[in-house]
Image 1 (cartoon, helix red, strand yellow):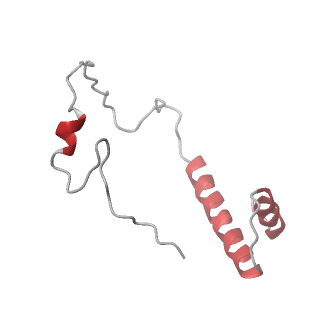
Image 2 (image 1 turned 120 degrees about the horizontal axis):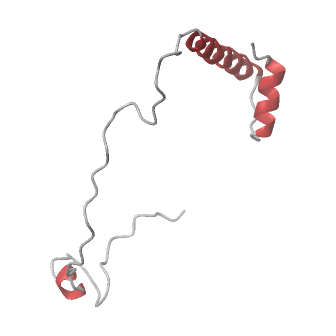
Length: 97
């Protein structure tokens, strides 16, 4: 199955994207390469292969939730270079035009 340039234009319009002619040609080639690769994968014999949910067979290890005492506000702010009574003060990082 090959993708045409008109189909790429249609997909782009669905995505609200606009491409020039050279980009449309590039995307058409790339889509067709992807489809060719998928066709190649479909040639594999997977008759006796068990389905996987994940390629690495490991189980997640969860820890039990524990209530622990958190750091209080005064203790958290005591090493701050600059703070108010309740907040860290940091330099402004967004420049205005």
